[in-house]
Length: 288
Length: 334
Ligand SMILES: Nc1ncnc2c1ncn2[C@@H]1O[C@H](COP(=O)(O)OP(=O)(O)O)[C@@H](O)[C@H]1O
Ligand SMILES: [Mg+2]
Image (cartoon, rainbow over all chains, first blue to last red; front, side, top):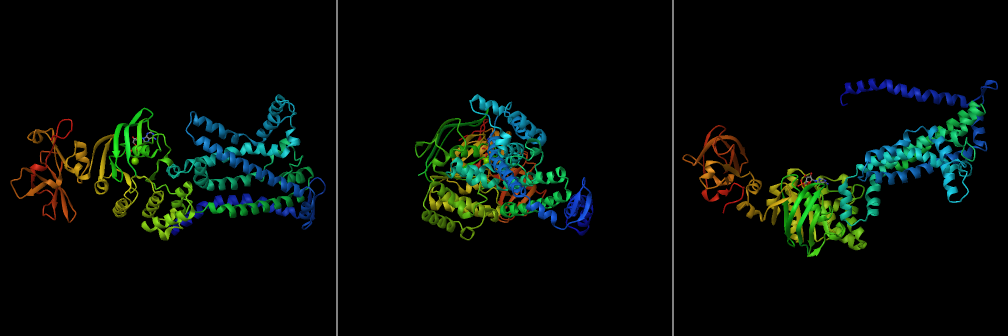
């Protein structure tokens, strides 16, 4: 890719993909922006004209707004912590030579292939059901009153369900990173007198920092928009109404497209702020 | 102190016996080189001594005490790896300090030793850099620095120079030799390069397939190789090995003569051949000689420059007192 000709050829070849991608992103974004300045109620009169920033003001000042931001951040933060901590532990375990390694690895990856709707349903009905769920049976076995997971511990339940789905992803990325660690470094540290925990802290963890950054970035982007899990389990009640879910309710349940679009634009801006913020703190790990 | 004794040490990976029962003593302060072709078990042997691999059977004594079950950190040995194994996210200073930090040595003493090592190894200007910002030779020195500050009973080197270019290799070879003279600590050095072995060692251990073929000083091995393998392995260019009727004349199965022990004469030499490739080094010239009827190809060293061209006839006279004789098992005949 050094000569002028090859560079312009490359540009030409990439153009269709770039244009498609831009269109894919820009058209919905512009339409959302367009609707966010309109009073648009499809079942109650349709397009009722421009309203300036009224939708934004209403969205931000609604009593559901701040709780939804908080719920979003709690879910994202909780899932990130759980997937990274357990991801590292699992990756270290899976890196050990053991019998049936291939099958165990596939089993660990499996939850990632289950659709969010399905996994949420399975968790809701099979594990967390207060009457028939496995957890309820476990609690009863120890003579305890079963927890009504989805109402009493709604946030915890959601974090557990979503973490279960994303743990394989984190594990997979961290496992490949651990496998790329030069074993001579660990041996050198061992000879230098570092006990196992220090070896982990001084050698393995710094080596994983780049992979952890990648996991944090990618997961944050996807977790900000989780929807199916909430829809299937709590339907946004018991304090689990995230920003995405709030927007969904505004657009589809209250049939207020303008208000929902204003929320959508806010979500886009929030996601970008968080992305820039993350890049800043952890992005240092990506270069070098 | 740093005397290391191996008694009947063996190592198996699964069913594969990499080290058959092996006895060896490395004296305190000695520079010992393990040399042998790739895959003969040199690294494995070194890692057994370091404690990075468990031995299958046998005993390892360090300064007379049984160290077989002692963890690598407690054996008091420092290792320099082929890949250097520096910690990439730590500065050079932190890399060198790491073993002292793990040992809980106080900060002032750490700084003193780092200073000393950095001065000795020419690293003072690089202490705040990361390993990734250093050249191969500098990384090598950091790895050595990290080993020195521990003040170990013995240093273990696993092919430390094989990632360096030829000029640097010669330089580092000297530095390591000088380090040994200064510290007078036991060093075990693994290499597949017989030149490194010959130039650095007090004692060379020649290994083949895990077996010790011969142990001795470089000149011992050069003068009296115990068998055909050692004869062919030690010395550069390789010794010429001749079988058949010519060997039979000397009552041997195989005879060996080094390239530097064959004289080129104008005429009337004992052997005769045709010049193939000539390697002109300036100080010496190596002729590859074909069609001698003795061996596929023979190498002859001539001091200085000699005017012989490709295809010329060449007359050779071996020095009778420099002919090595081996029996049909490849063992030396005295
Ligand atoms: N961890 C291991 N598992 C199985 N075989 C090994 C292992 N390490 C080394 N070997 C085998 O042991 C032999 C000696 O290896 P090594 O000591 O690395 O040789 P060298 O350092 O002399 O080149 C080789 O045949 C190698 O394949
Ligand atoms: Mg080796």
